[in-house]
Image (cartoon, rainbow, N blue to C red):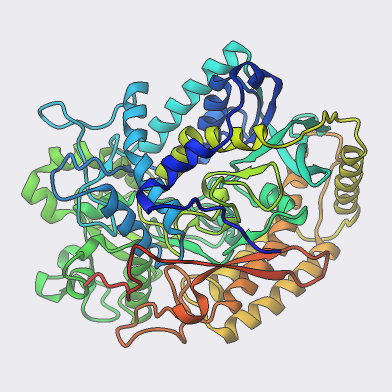
Length: 637
């Protein structure tokens, strides 16, 4: 199958406008005849469901939580980018486009990224109209701050709660449509299968997480906005419910999975502090605006930070990257923190941390100013660690945070299955090999508010979609398959918990397919994951029944998918013999230990096709064409 991204012709700056004009429209009177399923209620899912309902479509919206307000988008604290140039510091749509292409190490599509930069300005206007309480300056204008990978201030923020406030805006719009009867809400449901009829996505099968019953729903199109798969690593900054199951089940039904090895490691997280920890906490990247990152110059120096004199500190990011300093992108900051710790300069009990110090900022601006900017983050840090960051430098270390890989989609956000659209972190399309800070919120809302309402209309208006009900054989087959897997899991009666095996998988991925990889370690990981998966199906213990509330069964299904998906991640990393963005192959680095790309052989998207159980997936590639920016070695020095 040839991957056709369906990128419109014409100049880059006119592609989206031209495409909007050329898309077929659904007659307003006919929109009420179409049913659309949206899975997920984060920023992408809630905004898509609300907007499509506002247009007149009938929407069924599903979420795994007890309320849409608990979607993981709420955790994106730092801010949202937009090329408004309010700071008058030289920003523009083109600069945001360039920064994003460069930040992703030239592994994303020009057309998608430019559209994202274009729409960023509309998002801010839309959110202000919704009443999002963005920070404002003394004159009452919207304020901005800087984020990693950019030399301009383009990040709009609401203290340290931007994701929460934006989600409340989308949630409010969603609830308006629920009240009007245009959106039917289904909380506490987990999608376990995609139903295909005549080659098109026509419904889903979900498990009711309260009763345990399997339920089926039919529609004319399905939209997945189910987030990322960072929890494959067990320890991550993701919410505990984040998983790959919905996307992976769609992959098994024919949706290609693109760039699964692109996993972002965030440099600003609270370090791991115990063997049985189940969750990591992200401290916002915005802290690197004012905080200075440093370690002692002497390896093994265990003195408290306040006893280490200025002359014996190494502000290594400022030293190595004078242009960007502490605001280098996340992949660069993460690798440098690991490098310092590998040299024995790590701080804290484990030696796996570096300092993020606000002493200079407090001395310069005063404690009140710093508290106004980051007060809730400081409070959160103190509650978790017991240390006061106003007096003692924070300890931070990189942790798994965001996934740039996802289901392959074309310019319309449609997967390789007709009628299956994928939004937000669940698709692969905009961030390349590395996501710049404050860009995830931008993509989720651009996809949901401004792209899918147009492109899904083009699909519905131009596609013959005979009526399909849930009594179709395809739904019955789906139910039989999902029931069989649940019964198999419940019948194993082994001696290990699901979490034990998940933790083991996470350690394999972190050690051999984490911040850095090489071919030998990836081969080792491949073998270990296959062995672990075989042991899972012999040793796992899943108590209870399938016809009831059973969280062990829910977890077991997700970990079964992670065990298969982990192999796909490693295969993808093995295939890409270069370093780019967050994919850092130790054999491919410059003399300065920066990522060394191989544009001649790998300037493309890897898209994997499921070929059957225990069969090797087939690799397809989509070449990336750069007509408006020049491919160059990424440098922040």
